[in-house]
Length: 391
Picture 1 (cartoon, helix red, strand yellow):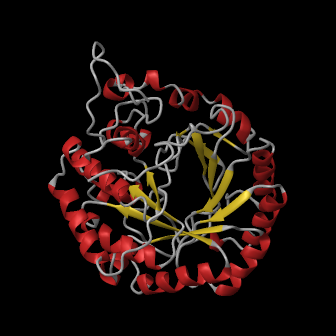
Picture 2 (cartoon, one colour; picture 1 turned 30 degrees about the vertical axis):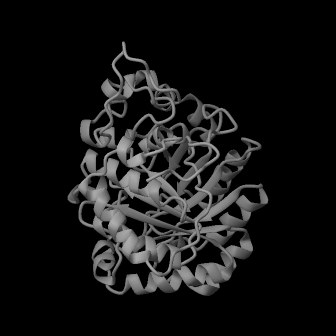
Picture 3 (tube, one colour; picture 1 turned 90 degrees about the vertical axis):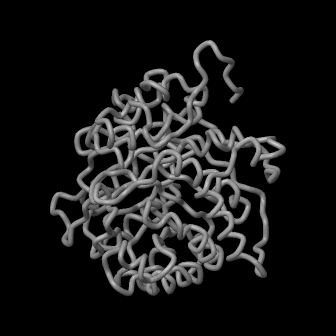
């Protein structure tokens, strides 16, 4: 197999990630009516009375807009952000400041066409929905509510009809990894703009599920790169996807250079079988962007605590006490996360550490140290006396 041509294997930020984030996720509430088995937030049924108020939320958005151009992308998530009645007001405020506003709701009765229209009119540009199984049986079991698969199919088409860009989020575990080709087929049929594949971090309710082994992660990442000219793909909590993109660039015979294991062979075979007779249009592959926890990315929870990511539960400050901009630039842990030479063991000596850095969330979840080596990565870096690959 040969690689499709692409301009560059990894996209780099056009600004200093130590000065301003590329994307900020704000968990506007932890309330949610679903009981998803993997939930990092261990969501609750009712809203917390200590959530950031509308006024405090607007002040946060003011601070984010004050970074100037390029302003960070803003995703309002939860829980279920549609549980907040002031959501259109927050979206309109952020839009008025020049922020690009996106939403990540749960598929519940609160997700209606009229609400989608109201939020689109307020300025929201993109919606992400979760699809964690290829069938109603597997997806509904993952989400903890019967009927949510069918409702998600309806919601996805409604999102497109209203005029949003559609993102599909899929959390991959040992239980559903074999369904990825079938999920891909649905992703393509829905007209998805971006498919974000989340690699399970054992935190929150996710501790009860089985994550992939490091070798399995490697196989899935190679398969994702194989199909990345069918739909734009993002690897969440698997920054070594960027390492794979660099390694594969310009390789004439990929299978000889990166031998195909049984999982990738299965995924590749099933993908070919499912798409036979209805070959989708190939497109220029979207190169992954160089962003990681605390380095271009940050998370604000429902009460204002700031984290390197939603899957790395080590708070570095609170926007009630200090502007987000100061926390992002000055917090010691965030500075350490932007210093890959401080990473432990394999990650600290890896020739790809400046463009990958490993999943800091996986490192913390398994070892308790956010700077430790990422146990979900199978790559063995060059020894100090060996020549490093260019990157």
